[in-house]
Image (cartoon, rainbow, N blue to C red; front, side, top):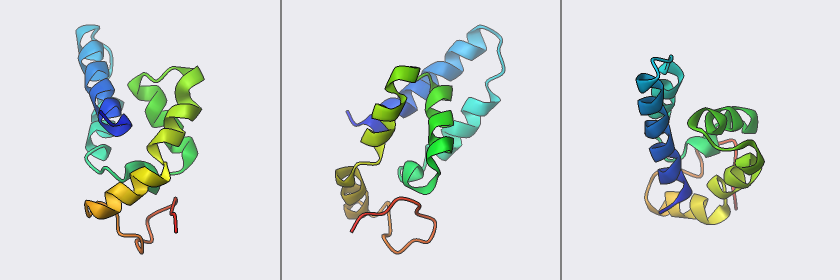
Length: 97
């Protein structure tokens, strides 16, 4: 299972956890919407990505490693093959040649 799918699953689990504890889960609902775009992490700044990863429950000591795996070149190339990324898209912050 790829890291992006794991992040989506973690976010869903966080939503359920927050609902069960009667905590505010609006941020995670917003993240759910953003995670519909598989190219998300190539379109947002690293600081924003770290906030997303923290919100879904990635441990602090794993934040950098997880972020790097989400933006690897092979992930980028795979998203291009699947038609999820257009390399000429101006919205992309992270691009590979």
